[in-house]
Image (cartoon, rainbow, N blue to C red; front, side, top):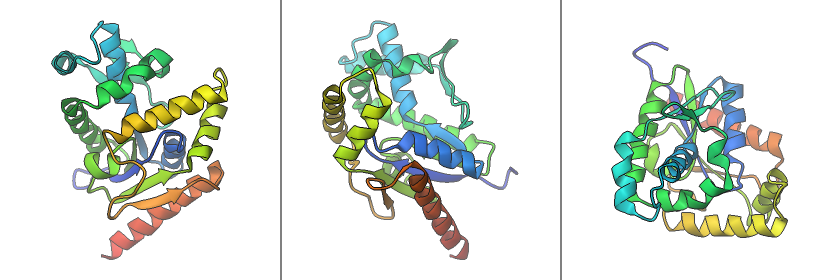
Length: 230
C-alpha cells in the first residue's frame, strides 16, 4: 500500500452465534484482507480485569485500569494472536470465567470509547488492501463510514444450533440459556438485530458456511463496484 491509499473497511455486525467471526475470517482470507476481531479486545480486557482481581462491576476501577491495558492483536486472518503485555491470551480469553464477565465490562461507555479509538487505529494501519472488522456496533459506532457495512444475522434457533455444535462440552440447554442471556445483555448496550440505514443484511438462517461467505463477498463486490462508479 502507498501513503495515498487507505485500506477498504468491511464492517460486519451481528448477534452471538451468527457466525461473524468464522465468516469474517474466511472472507478476509479469500480477499487477501486483514481481519480484526473487536470482541477479542473486550474479552482481553475482561481477562485483564479478572487477572488483577478488579471487580468488573466497579466501573471506576475498570476505567482506571484502561491506561495500563497493553493490548495487541494480529490482523492476519490465519494468526489473529491476542496479547496483553507479555502474556499471550489468545486461548485464555475464550474461557468460561472470562465470558461470564465480558458484558459487565463492555457496557461501560468509557471502555467502549477507549476501545473504539483503538479499533480505528488498528484498521487504518493494516498493510493490506482492505480489512474485515467484526463485532458489536461495528457498523454504527466503530466504523459508520466504512465502505461496506453488513449485518450478519440468523434466527435464534439457528444460532443456538451452531453454538451447540461449537461447544460440545456443554448441554444444548446450557448453550441456549447462555445465548439468550448474552442477547439480553448485549441489547442493553447496542442494537444488534436490525440494520441501520445503509447497512446490508445477510440472513444466514438457511445458508451453510460456504453460502454465507459467498453472500458476504457478493455484498462487498456490489458495494465496492457501486462506490467506484459514484
